[in-house]
Length: 110
Image 1 (cartoon, rainbow, N blue to C red):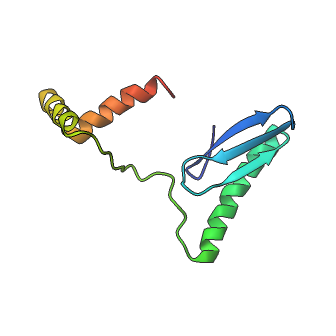
Image 2 (tube, rainbow, N blue to C red; image 1 turned 60 degrees about the vertical axis):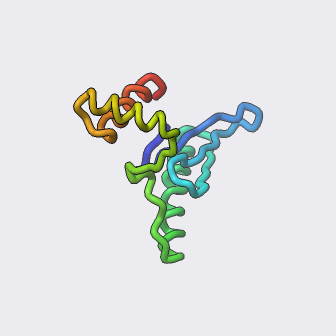
């Protein structure tokens, strides 16, 4: 993973084509890049982010921010109730309790 200006790039190597190709994974907009060496892929990643930001500026649009820290989640009412109870028993708000649970979960993945 690479990071530049808050944007995260994921890179894979295509053995058949002998090229690195990547995608900026944290906006909804599609931003891709490629290179033959590590240095080329790093430069291409930064260049693609800069191109994206310039393109948005030319259109007079704000670029999509990588993440706001907010997301909507739809869950069954019974699960909502269980989360509420668990948060109350822990002495936390639902938001704080879920944040803690998610933090523990992603530690095992990332």
